[in-house]
Length: 193
Image (cartoon, rainbow, N blue to C red; front, side, top):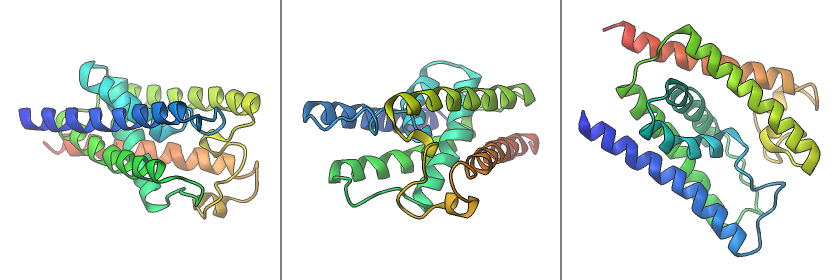
């Protein structure tokens, strides 16, 4: 199983580095925009946290990688938010990070066991706290991290949820359900022996 640890470490390092290098490149070229480029969406944040889960045996980080990063990456792969204005580097980072998040979640889930209902509650509470922080940042910067101020420009599941701000409650509920369902599947995987 050492090869799983090594492979997960490589994937985690790759996706974390992709976000850092992309951010550094945006800063170096003068293209960095606080309203678009902070790692405050779930996928970029998950990519930055991925190497931490590798080095620290923190159940919350491990659960984040499996239950937030994995489903978030998968939804983004199915419904990518890539606009024509995104340059080639941004598109490469997008695909690399989201494919990596799914792979990272699968690799973690093969190695680590869920610790119980308290871990799921902590995970959901952390996501809610992050939503509150991002709401404040969005208000201050006139940004749209986590699509809390308006829907993405490209078609998405949010279109089925109505107009702003009506789509926010079902978006949060769907996200919480996806996190809980992923946690449940992860728990069932280990419960079966």
